[in-house]
Image (cartoon, rainbow, N blue to C red; front, side, top):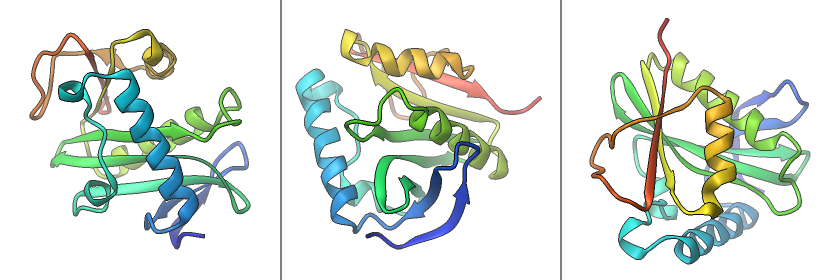
Length: 166
């Protein structure tokens, strides 16, 4: 099992904690995530981070667990003092539709607010495979936006953002 710090029980009873990306379950979930992204996005439009990129300074990675069972994961990449990006949101097989992604997304938004970000953005795919993710983000207030950071217009990508300041 991975080492965790800043463990936070969510309102659903799930435990969301910063993860060091060393546990075999997390590594396997991220390998599956990358494989599915490759299967559903052209190579030049696939923006998922690998393990070394998720371990880089400026990226904080969280796992979602029920006891020792891994239910999902996600990360925030620091873009600048006022802007963060969601990366590698993933629910483990068998746990979709159970509120894992919604609880994690609420946690990531709260973490971004705590950091003083004014905006939290993300890139997801445009193919029908990615429609559930797009709907999740839209339900939580994210709106389609132009490309941000180092991204450029891409018919295979959808860019979304959430304003965090009142």
